Image 1 (cartoon, rainbow, N blue to C red):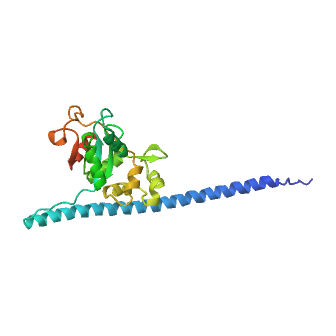
Image 2 (cartoon, rainbow, N blue to C red):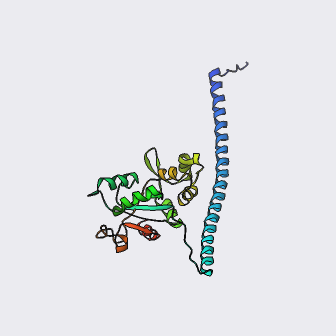
Image 3 (spheres, helix red, strand yellow):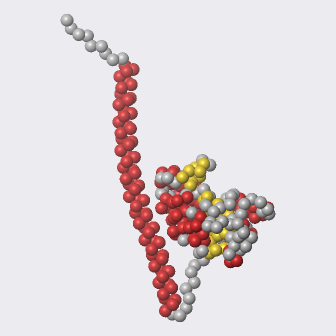
Amino acid sequence: MTETKVQAPETLIKQRKDALRNAENKVAQIAATKKSRRTKRKVIFKRAEAYVKEYRDKEKAIVDYKRKARSSGSFYVPEQAKLAFVIRTVGINNIPPKPRKILQLLRLLQINNGVFVRLTKATKQMLQLANPYITFGAPNLKSVKELVYKRGYGKVRSQRIPLSNNIIIEKALGRYGIICIEDLVHEIYTVGPNFKQVNAFLWPFKLNSPTGGWEGKKSRHYIDRGAFGDREEKINNLIRQMN
């Protein structure tokens, strides 16, 4: 007695072939993704090394300028700051329309909110007009890093998303060549050509109240031990207290 082989229906054969093809494509895609990530990690590492060297060279150059100036009996005048970190010191009550509008433009919608600002003639005028309601100064590299790493959130589809991995940054800013958090910090700190796009991507920083709070200090200038005004490099001390 001979056995009759039952031939699989054509649709079943096609389904099996499609499933096998899909499985092979998936394996190939996973392998390509892993390879791409390995390559990207190397690129990110090299960039991070280059940034560290750039920062060190800049610090060394400033030290050399100061030594040369001291040895020649003159003074070293540092270049004007290009970057400011601005913090709102008061709430929403009793603010005139023009300063209120400036605070909106700066995205400082709540007390203890902070943002980075590129210093130009226009933005300096804005800061002066809003002076009684804000405090600001030139952040150093350590402050920029701490703010971005500890309190950095990005704006993705109008939502506040933590910068938990570089994929979020690359999706939003990859077209500007910014693919990792080190690129983002570098662009902000050096006020690079894509500063506007990077700063718009960063959500305003939500900071804690400073040690001792603002109460009783809001109406006095920083020079008079108050809250508002230009703190220059002393803004870094305040960032440490509020971060």
